[in-house]
Image 1: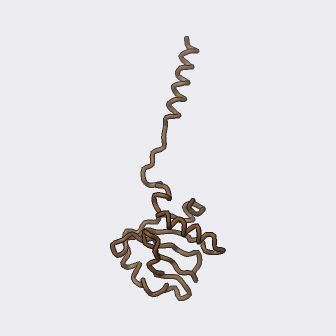
Image 2: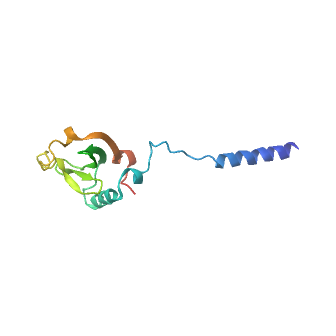
Image 3: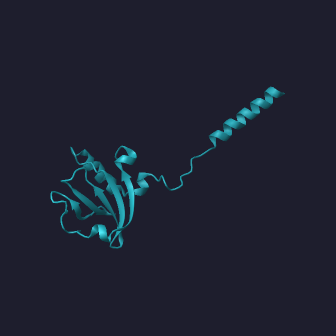
Length: 128
């Protein structure tokens, strides 16, 4: 009788363990939910260059739209701002002078709702 009860409890315990599911609280949303697919492609293409892989991607609200600011790996490369459809809006900083292309000189002052959506430091690799 005790042997049968032990077996039933053991089976019940195994079944309860397999029913446990990890709940996503929103803090660890997948990259696919955080970046538009075209931007993921751009990041992969940049990584294929010898020294072009971005260091981070930050989402901002800028002039009533969502934009993505990509930080380049080196000081003499431009940092790029893309809209959600992956059109380049400009280069607010970076380059040889550090001032970008002078088309978005007030980007940092006008952009709001800063949210880091991807970083090499966080993942150790580029998006899949």
